[in-house]
Image 1 (tube, rainbow, N blue to C red):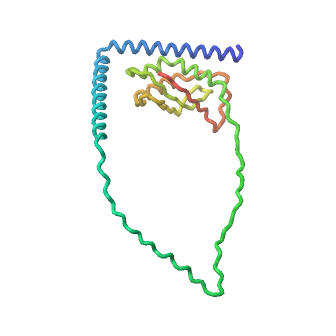
Image 2 (image 1 turned 45 degrees about the horizontal axis):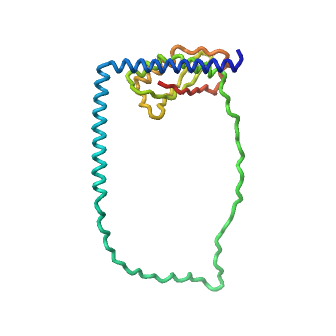
Image 3 (image 1 turned 120 degrees about the horizontal axis):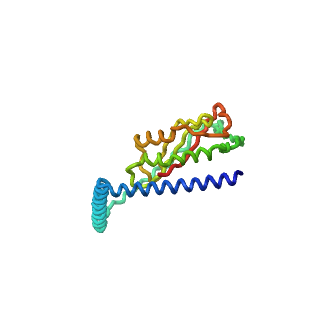
Length: 219
């Protein structure tokens, strides 16, 4: 299998995994809607939103009423005459002594050298690693049970391609996403760490160069 066929298979597998995640979310949402506790919470939320909207409208109406009142007249300030002070007398210079000149010097600017370095290319095993992370979508979705809207987060970790172990986890919630609570963070790290990944064809790890990988996970 050449590289183009492998990429095509990977894109197809990724699309199938995303479709499976969407179906799982729909089924989970349907089960939540049948739960009486979830319905009661939704009804309370709608009542709170309605009250908040009514208060906001009332606040806008009161603010407009206050703005409709004419502003008070500006206070009359009496003009005061400003006395001009006479210019200071010139400094006294002794006869036969020349005034000192100010020292002025200009320095030529120097161009800084450019220190450009080559960008590190992504390792060849990263695509295989991302596919294995996507295969854990069902376990990752179970960590967000009870959340009624989809979201996304960025997971960054150090990967050892020889042992398949991950460490130094960083979980960052993206825009319009609820914060990640400690319980959800523990569940996500457990699902992303165990079991270790099986990465084939990876070169040996170089000392002092950690393999940091960042992946966006949707839920």
